[in-house]
Length: 97
Length: 417
Ligand SMILES: Cc1cc2nc3c(=O)[nH]c(=O)nc-3n(C[C@H](O)[C@H](O)[C@H](O)COP(=O)(O)OP(=O)(O)OC[C@H]3O[C@@H](n4cnc5c(N)ncnc54)[C@H](O)[C@@H]3O)c2cc1C
Ligand SMILES: [Zn+2]
Image 1 (cartoon, protein in one colour):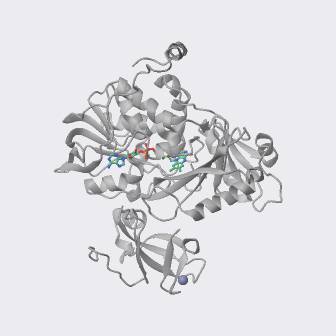
Image 2: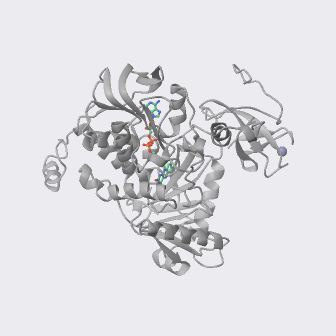
Image 3: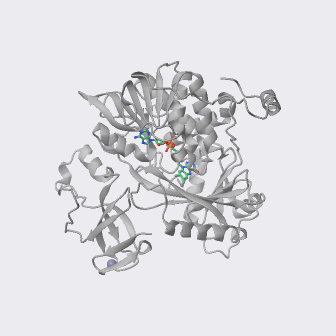
């Protein structure tokens, strides 16, 4: 059972209160009318699937109902930390992409 | 390969079962193979078998990082059915179903394929409309499929609570009589033994750590235990680790890896002689020949490579099962485990050429690829042999996520497993 920290509620809560909403930091194409099929396809369907550090969007669905990001290791299941959408949390040995 | 037979069984009984031959060799890898299949699950082993058998190819290796069938093949709940909604999927899974029907004979190995029927329940009007639509589509594709009402469900599964007093009452179901279950380990072992007999080298305990690409062409694999092994064509059949393998070759796949779990109870007397699945309440159950109840669940919502599932999912699944089958409420659970399933956005597999020449992927089977094992191996062998897809698997190329030609089986076929 994950204990996730909601940066809005400023509390640790159990996994069951949350809903995993996939990869974080997905930017919608800025010029959607002029996207190629490949660009649209990548935006809609291609997600990072790392065995290791991953940035994900979580929804505090049975709590404050707000979204936030989690930096987590998908192999060891270690949770590095939570941060608000629009913020950034540095990971050991990782550069902002 | 000495063939298995009734007489053989008797003969070995007289010798205290001490002289059984090994099922496959344990060869040292050669420097070069014409075909390397990465991943020794059912799909990979079937691919190698059909390459040798149907396409008469030689110089083939299967490279597996652990032991045969130790991935999802040996962790799944073994439901086999072919009642998918869309033509492309229905044809592919029905192709597999036909191969299942002759598989034990073909492999000379009892895969315990048992066509005990599979019931997919509907709990509300929309479920029932979807079921009717799918059953009609199945029939148009020549697949056996029927709509049952609650009364008929109750006749087939007396232990199921089909009353109207439950929170999610059973209104009816789709029913595929030819569907059923098979013994998962036997499928891996049967294919391995038959492939080995045709000269395929099965190389276990050998992890692929890199795919060597020169000028856009895959030329070999780098392994942790045996260094470089060169290859003509490479087929990756690595399920939950497909994204990792694609990363080695420098591209991304539209797959996400999620934990999926299952559990079994203590063995009890026979109470269920078919398979019952419910997508709406998210649980399904069958009973193995040993007597344990085999119970499955949904995936964990997050990406994960730990081969275990989360506790909330166990709890939800148990709720669903107890509501459907109140009689099992005091049965003890024996074991719980997880596998890593590679899900795609349209819940259909990827059987495809890739941006790298001579490198092919067969993945994305997600939560429901065991049923496809023979068909998947069959069409992928064809792809490796000819370098291009045949008509059964053409639609399943990875580029459909660019041009939008998805085969949306999500929800449509009540895709669970
Ligand atoms: C709990 C659970 C229940 C399921 N229930 C059903 C069901 O009822 N019906 C159904 O049809 N399907 C079901 N499935 C799905 C089904 O198990 C899979 O789709 C199917 O078994 C995939 O087979 P495979 O051979 O492709 O993969 P696997 O059997 O996972 O084989 C892949 C192999 O690749 C190897 N590998 C990975 N990386 C490397 C590397 N770097 N080098 C070398 N080898 C590597 C792995 O060790 C593994 O053995 C279920 C899955 C799970 C987890
Ligand atoms: Zn909150």
